[in-house]
Every structure is written in C-alpha cells, then in structure tokens.
Length: 105
Image 1 (tube, rainbow, N blue to C red):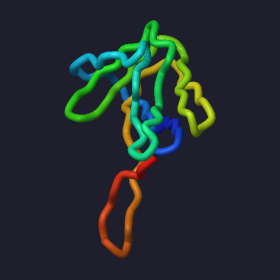
Image 2 (image 1 turned 90 degrees about the horizontal axis):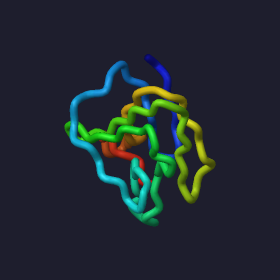
Image 3 (image 1 turned 135 degrees about the vertical axis):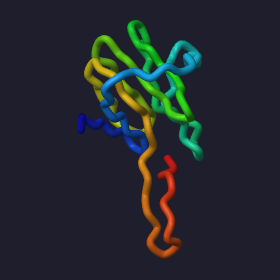
C-alpha cells in the first residue's frame, strides 16, 4: 500500500489493518491529528461520525468508513478516502548536523 496524503507537516499513510490500541478522546468534538508547536493550530477531523481514532505505540491510526476532511488553519483542506491510515509527521534530514528531525509546523 503506497497511498499517502499530506497536509503541511502531517502525512496519512494507508495501512492494511487497524492495530489494537487505545481510543483517543475528542477535543471540542474533533479528532486532533497533530498540533502546531508555534501556533497551536491543529490538523483535525471535524466530522467524526463513523471514524475510529486510536493511539498505538506513540502513533495515531484512523479507520474511516467514508471519506473525511482534514482541516488546518494554514493549509487547504484535504479529503481522505475511506480506509485505514497511520498518521505520522514529515521528517527532514540536516546534512550538517547529520540527523533527521520532525518538521515543525
């Protein structure tokens, strides 16, 4: 499965099955995929009916039975088709420091 969707510093990657994990609570009726470090803005799913959102070993996973929209104050909304998705951050490599780090939004 090489299907990806990206919004800013967040990537949703299609996975084959939903792992067993801990349900993630909503915040003001939304699922928060990631929060910006500088602004506090958030990548979020606002229409959560039919969406399962869990955390497993520090990673978030989404199972959505129908397409959902991911919104963020500084990015265009994106539509994620029905499926099972792992939520991860974009990483960059600093050749001078010889290290990889998560891109900050």
